[in-house]
Length: 267
Image 1 (cartoon, rainbow, N blue to C red):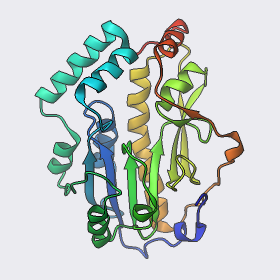
Image 2 (image 1 turned 90 degrees about the horizontal axis):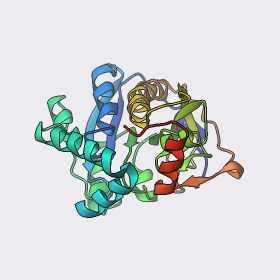
Image 3 (image 1 turned 180 degrees about the vertical axis):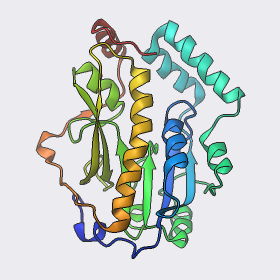
Image 4 (image 1 turned 90 degrees about the vertical axis):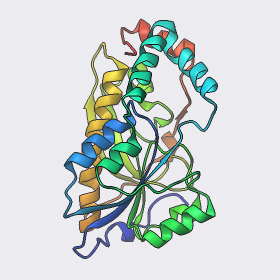
């Protein structure tokens, strides 16, 4: 299934709040910036957050994640990032705690494609399931659960910057802006119709940390705008031209060196 049944996005909710379930990963450094803004700014009379599912990032042992981050940051920035992460953890900062303090129900989730999880979510009757850096691909059974559909936010222009770390690749390729995209989720990765975008200005010599943080924060505001339009039935989905599709994986050390040669920094 590619593309959108546009009729579902124009149905609205009949005036009641849009019922939303979030699925995300446990990232206290960057993804949490999205939720700090969303939880603080979303209109309670228009959007009802019925639950938040938080999964482990990467689904891999901690040593493997550390090795990946060493290759990504290099020795100096690895120490800086590690210190930042450790300090954040010691302070008890996390998306689950933020959600609980904000009054939202945590919905346990080992996998969004697990049958028991799907049935639990079905009983919650969401209008929309929203993925914010969810660490796995949604299969057809979970995609069919919400009354209106599943949406994902992606910090890159689609279908050019499909895949991982789109902010990094947009900087490396000299883009003037990072395109933050909210799109429908379909079984094929990053292939659903576009529901909303914003252009986030990049600098000639920029800092990846600044870009990731800023696109998460302003992406939350874009998601609020898209959800308000979904509630009113005012979304006009835009199909992707998949003939232009590309896919980028996790950056390799040579890619990091190329980014730094352009005058950009990681942290």
